[in-house]
Structure formats: structure tokens, C-alpha cells
Length: 277
Image (cartoon, rainbow, N blue to C red):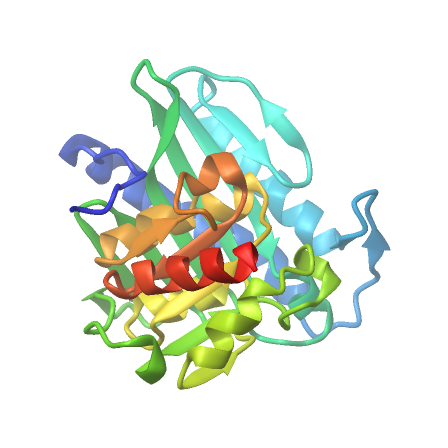
């Protein structure tokens, strides 16, 4: 049975229009973020106990300004400044995904940008971007392909690696199994303990690694909408599979498993078996 896909198709005219604009947005975010990285920036704690900095807020404000100037009718949902209603198209922004990495001088943080389209049955992602300011690289993906762009102008289409069993796989997570940060989901340990290699090279970088053929699965048991929307087109465009923790819609359930494809059912079975014990 073919795995369910959660992204709508990006039309060719949309690709011609919006992919160059996403590049503009990447540059806009990087211009704000770069001066703050490794600067000893001040950190605040939000009501949900997550950290936020001037870089997070400044980058999202700049992205919103650029989108509103070009597409005033489009909606925007961002982690830092909430929702601006719109029609037909909606941008989803996470200016710094992995703020904890950012404030600890770790290079794995990134910027997530998604474009969604409402065809009459609700918004679905059509275009997604995972961009890493510290490394100067970005992935832009849609149902047709996912492309890696480098700061020096080089680009290449990327694909997930060939399928392998979990016992031979590299599995990534954002936090240690059992950590309270993402709900203390003990099932994660069953999967990572069955893998050949498990590392917490997480947040959006884990999905970057998967989509570029360097890892086999990435697990996040608890996420927000803006953590997920951009990842789906990138992974699906690279030939990977995505689902929620239960195997359903990750955008509705707020959790995400991404894999090379055949490995997915093995992971879901392990999670379900562990949860049932």
C-alpha cells in the first residue's frame, strides 16, 4: 500500500514564482540572524518555557514585512507573532528552529519556511524550506523534488538514502529519550536502542540530514505546527515518508516521524508495541 502524502502538488507556475521568493526570504532571515550568532545574545523564557531571543523575533519580523510587501493578501502564521489571516495562500514561519542550539553556540539551528495553499478543503503545504544560516546551506522542497542550495551558488537535487533495516540505520532525535522537553516519551528509547547509530542531531537539522541521504529516520514526539509544515515538502520531495507518532497526519497530531520509507512501518510497530506494554 502506498504511503499517504500530506503535501499538495506545487504547480509549475507556482514554482517559478515562489521558489525565487523563498530564496529572498532565506537571505532576509540570514541577514538578521548571522550578527547574533556566537554573540552572547540575551535570552528570555516564554510562557511555554521555551527560550526566545532578539534574533528569533527580528528574523520573523523581517520575514513578515517582506511577505506582506509582496503578497499582502496572503496569510502568515509564525512562532513569535501569531497569525495574520489571509486567503488561498498562507506562509508558516519558524525563524530559528532550535533556539536552544542557537543560544548554546551549536551550528544545527535553522530557519523553517513553508507555503500552504487552500484548495477548498483546508490548507496543505506545497513548498518547504530548511535553511541553516551557520552553514550557508538550504533545502527547498515540493512534491516534484528537493534541492540543496549552497552559499557559493552550487545546487543539486537530493534524495533519501537506500532503504535498510533499523538494525543498520542511523536514527536521529531532538532530545534524549525520556527527556521532559518533548513530553518524556519513553517509546523513543526502544527505537534508538534498536538502531545501529542514534544521535541527538535534531531539530530541523535531523530532517536536513535525512533528506540529503545521511540518516535513515528522525523522530520528534511533540512539535508545534510551525515546526512541521516546512519539513513535510522537503522530506516528501526527497522521496521520504512522514507521519505522526501514531501513523496519522503530523500537522493535526503535533508529532513527526520522517524516514527513508520502508523503515517507517518498523518504527511505528515498535512505538505501538512499547506504548501498549
